[in-house]
Structures are given as structure tokens and as C-alpha cells.
Image (cartoon, rainbow, N blue to C red; front, side):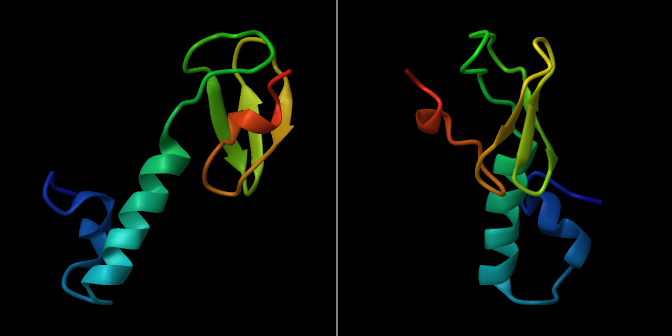
Amino acid sequence: MATKKVGAAGKFGPRYGKKLRDNYNKIHKSSKKKYNCPVCAREKSVTRVSFGVWRCKTCKTKFASGAFEFREENFKK
């Protein structure tokens, strides 16, 4: 079970070292975060579908972007 202090890496317990668990938390947080859509300008509608594939819930547009983080600057006009 994840707690507030250790975050998503709480499932690992004391294993694998603090640095690796901190990196896992950072990646997990950015991949689960919702981003703004550059096409329909809807807030918090872009979510991660798979590795490097992102999809807007409202306009159903798919994007290829970062593996764990959506980079909006690639799509701005």
C-alpha cells in the first residue's frame, strides 16, 4: 500500500534503494498526470494510453510524445 510519504514506490518496501524509488515516483506521477489538449484546448483531458502514445478524452485525437511525460510545446502553432 502506498502512503503519502513514500508514494507509489511504497509497493517496493525497503528494496532497490532510495534513489531508484524516488525516480520511480517521479515517472509514475508524470505518466498518470492529466495534461491540456493542444488541439481542442480542453484542460486536463490528455491521458497516457501506452508507451509514448497520448489521447485526448474529448476530441479523441492521439498524439505521439514523450514516453512518460506529454510535451505540449511540440504541438503549439
